[in-house]
Length: 344
Ligand code: NAI
Image (cartoon, rainbow, N blue to C red; front, top):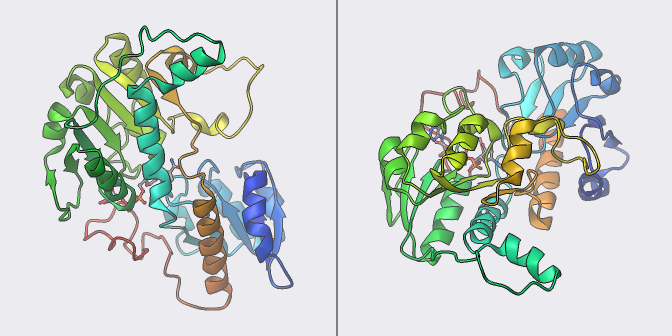
């Protein structure tokens, strides 16, 4: 079976290469999948894609005409795949869980870095500047964390927050029982949280869940963290909220328009995205380039599940990690959520 991998970096190849052999042949492309690059999948039985590959209807039609039978996402989110277009043509599988701790821990790392000004201190001491002026932070102990989306990652973050002695409020479309956590309506969470962290998927319903209206409801000085998907936040409104001193700090591992920028080296280039450029210049904004997943444990978990998904398909087994409208497990579902940890 030939599998064409798109948007691959050295670390992807390293985590997958031990699975290549007589049965599975891997072709690694560093380019992203889009209409113009879909032809690289000619002759492949499956494609393996990541968060910023654009698997729209036109791309799916091309893949289908080449005889590609499977789209294997090596990530959890699938907002970049047109599931309606894939329906009845190409099956789609994903990696529903791979170390939620990787993302939850990165979330806490960003928060600690921000509120204790570690990013500033690091730069200062590199220059032998040992002044403490402007580095005053605040304790997390006793503060209120508002978690939007309490699935695998949200739950892992909640456990970390409890360890820090924080109060936790939660909002989820499908609330569950979590010891020591109070579920609220979204507005109440926005009003009462000192820190707000986003862990819901990107769907038409959650797109710009953080916008001018929701920012206005937040406490003055609230810290906003997004390690989920960029378009959960209206970036222009966030920038305004920061300029108006309403938002105390923002920690962003994802960005609405990240697909043309993240994972690539643009140092020495003129970046045309004025909103991102302005956000990055803010002293109270920390941006990482969609790296929350990037731990050794997560990479090997991703490779193992992806290869198993591919083998399940080609060896005729049930696709436990399939995502499709027909199966009723896509995020526009109206029924009960997937059991946590059980895949889809
Ligand atoms: P999950 O499926 O376990 O949890 C998502 C939660 O969001 C569920 O509890 C669900 O009920 C809830 N939800 C769905 N629609 C909602 C709505 N309209 N309002 C509020 N809550 C809603 O997913 P998991 O594994 O926790 O991942 C969460 C997200 O994190 C993924 O969708 C993905 O976008 C992002 N992610 C980011 C990574 C990174 O490297 N930055 C890596 C992995 C995931």
